[in-house]
Amino acid sequence: MSWTVWTEEIPARTVLDMPVDLRRKTVNFLRALAIEVGGAIDLSRRPPGDAMDDFGVRYSLEVPGEPVIIEYMVMRDAKEIRVPVMVWFH
Image (cartoon, rainbow, N blue to C red; front, side, top):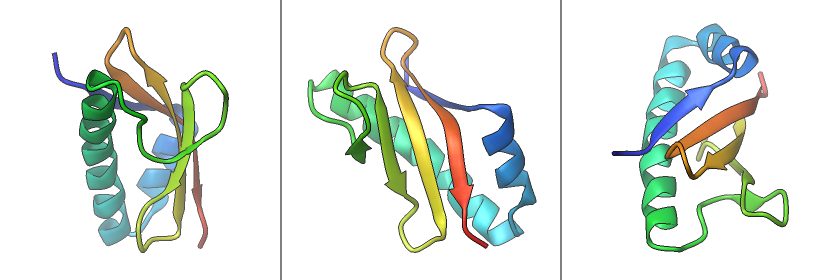
């Protein structure tokens, strides 16, 4: 089973409010992030981003070159990353 990404309602609305080009970049980034996080976890490595807790669950990072910050949670059992917070500086 491959890793997937799931966003909560407010981050999903944030993405929908973005200009089309930024929306596309953000969605592609999230898809790639799920693959990268999954690969890191499967190899017992630290996932990308800045750790926000001591449990290896919550991380934060910027979409490179874009005014978007994402906080995500690693749901190991579900092989999923969840995005509860997204900040778009516009």
